[in-house]
Amino acid sequence: AQSVSQHNHHVILSEAASLELGCNYSYGGTVNLFWYVQYPGQHLQLLLKYFSGDPLVKGIKGFEAEFIKSKFSFNLRKPSVQWSDTAEYFCAVIPLSGGYNKLIFGAGTRLAVHP
Amino acid sequence: GAGVSQSPSNKVTEKGKDVELRCDPISGHTALYWYRQSLGQGLEFLIYFQGNSAPDKSGLPSDRFSAERTGGSVSTLTIQRTQQEDSAVYLCASSHEDRNHSPLHFGNGTRLTVT
Image (cartoon, rainbow over all chains, first blue to last red; front, side):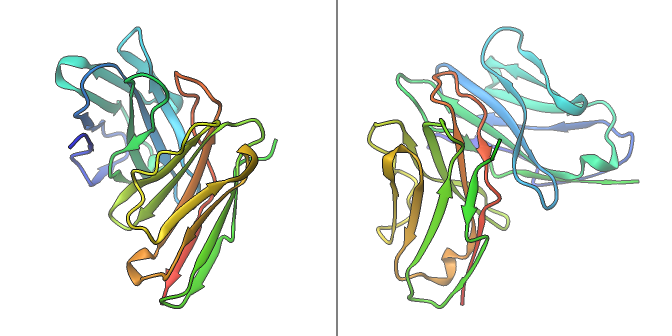
């Protein structure tokens, strides 16, 4: 079945550690890719997105993600995390197969950053 | 401007009762999604409305679930004969009609508890 996979369900890091959260999707063809974040007690918000062009995209708060088409991956990275990055992170995909298509989310990765 | 508004914010109901959850999207947004967020389950797609097109209902888990969108604006998600496994946070999101997909704007959700 077509899906979005986030391999790490829980990640615990110390401040200043580097972060990489994996995301793989199983849709063939062209896709739009997103990372959303949900901070404790807040609603989901967009972190970054990829539609086309440079496969390395920059988002808010120092996050970036790299689209590797051959690996069907869109991993999220941050060189040095802060306590305030504690949140749940969701990868999401829109497979573009003509017309309008729905946004499908991965199961999420819960990140805890300890001071 | 106003964001996506969902009501009620919390709903406790007895098993077997029907419930209605309401979503007021951002004015002018033609795309509207319902998702379900359960502990450890991530974001489960339920239904997608886009303009005047027939809704994509492929994510509805059973025929007890239905949704309407009246006048291309307000949407209601109805769960009939609720079961305990329906307990979750039900999230609504909207975006502009845009093939490249404008970011989703999420509401704060309705936390449904079935006792």
